[in-house]
Length: 129
Image 1 (spheres, rainbow, N blue to C red):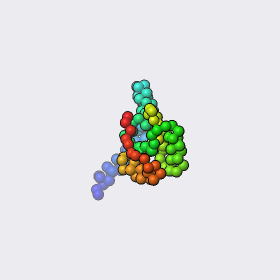
Image 2: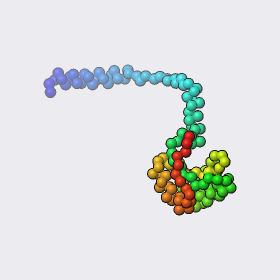
Image 3: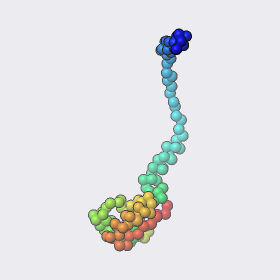
Image 4: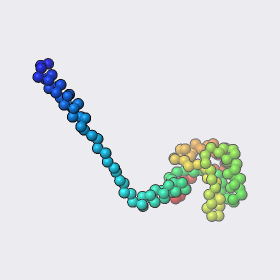
């Protein structure tokens, strides 16, 4: 390495160190202007998800009929299995006991195997929206 190259390297390093102290980072603020409709739509979507209106999933029906037997069926399910969520839905004139919220038919079929031992009339269906 010759002397000229060595001097250039030293000069570059000193120059970088000296002038880097004068450099400063930039600071700024960002203001987001959001349409109020976005907030309303997000709340509506959250409510629809909560009420299970957006899902494209499968359920298992244990019973359809009067409210008293539907309540007994739900209680029997919760005490005997209770693995998946269950609820009573009212579709005039019947009360229906629905179990689960399965992503695909295979999941629902696996669950039905366990449920069918206690509830012989159980079947898989895809709720209409």
